[in-house]
Image (cartoon, rainbow, N blue to C red; front, side):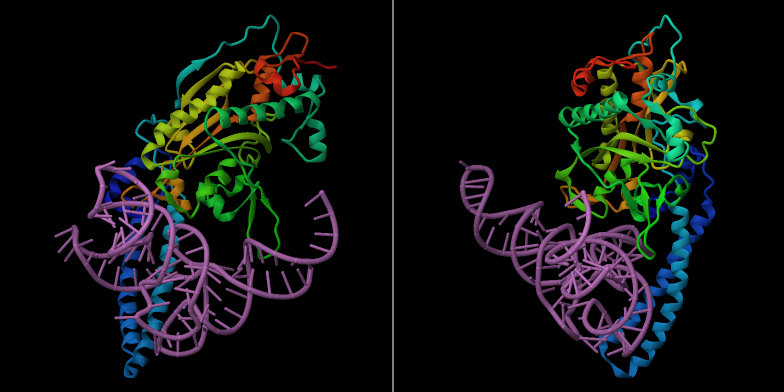
Amino acid sequence: MHNLKEIRKDFEAFIKALKKRSTNVDFKKLKDLDIQNREFIQKKETLEKEKKDISKSKDKSLFARSKEISSSIEKISEQQKKIKSDLNDILSNIPNIPHSDVPDGKNEEDNIEIKRSGNIPKFDFNPKSHYELGEKLQMLDFDLATKTTGSRFVFVKNKLALLERAISNFMLDIHTTKNGYEEVSPPLLANENTMFGTGQLPKFENDQFEVKTDEGSERKFLIPTAEVILTNIIKDKIFDKKNLPMRFVASTPCFRKEAGSYGKDTKGMIRQHQFYKVELVSIVEQNKCLEELERMTDSATGILDLLELPYRKIILCSGDMGFSAEKTYDIEVWLPSENKYREISSCSSCSTFQAVRMKARYKDQNNEILYAGTLNGSGLAVGRTLIAILENYQQKDGSISIPKILRPYMNNLEKISIN
RNA sequence: GGAGAGAUGGCUGAGCGGUUGAAAGCACCGGUCUUGAAAACCGGCAAAGGGGCAACUCUUUCCUGGGUUCGAAUCCCAGUCUCUCCGCCA
């Protein structure tokens, strides 16, 4: 969320900065409401001052006047609250401003590739898709999941379940021992305010799975990514600068409705309602965001290097970035069956955008209070890593050789085959 | 599910109708002392919002929402959350 005080300083610049994004913000209304809001605050405060003075004076002759004032305050206050709430509605639906590094563009076609790494495997046969491979191995079962649960779910079984677990453990180990992240095993449900903090609410409620709770108690949502719960670790806090940076990693299931993606990636486990993801979150001083973004992205690509999977790194254009991001790198892994790169990680700096929503601040050496910078990135999506391994490491006979680095996590198994 | 207790500043924790925005301690910042550091001592230190170029000033805030009162952190009602004990389950 943006700081109104900052917006006010140069309203035109604010509009201009957001032009890069495809938004339909009613800027005029925003400005008018802000002015109205402040007018009402002033009216209210004048009355409050008078009332306070009467109360302090303990002068009985003025008590009647005080009562009058109370009812006036009530009226004005009501109007002011309405204005403030309208103002907040607009404000909380405005996305972050793209950093100047970010290329202008409308959609994913305008993203820019900045790096390629690894060798694309050459096959002397027609490479199969992960779901063909998995079903043939009898270790991916989509039909069963449809029966027990519904579409966009999958049973991962036998050695592929082991592989999935190995991937997760391997990534956690690297991030905790080599990259300086602290491992967290967080709750998988988040309340409304937490979801607001990272920007999932109010705008993207349709993408969330809400869990039914007792009447009257707080609303709860299945986390769409561990980013939500990990970033909110610092919610409502003012901490010392010396605590920064904070870096957290968690491997959790993620739940997404994937509303609006009907017909997209319907086959296989590319796009599921539930998937595991190893998530990285950093909390940093506000001027260190971009530096940390590079570090985080390197942590993510480091995993692909170790797994010896070919990938490329792209910078998202202004039109393709997520709501809370100021700058995002996507990392895409090579999928032989599709003959193209597919997203396996997305690393974003959110500048202070989420911190303002969460009221997460720190004190610097002058005891000045500043909003923190937050970053999140996948390190990596476990399901998609599984897919990438299946496809890139497939053999002519339909078996899968296991990346060397993962073997210690799989009882030194070298190959997954039907028996 | 039954019975209690609680929610106060960055943290711990007093206050239980009228200069209380709030004692005390810790943390933090500045100073004295010291070759330096520690300790000790002295001083400072809540946030948000409004007005002002600024110095500064005003308002709000002691979980949330109502109520009583000229006046509420303090009293009353409703709600949310947390904790403890018992039961049940893991």
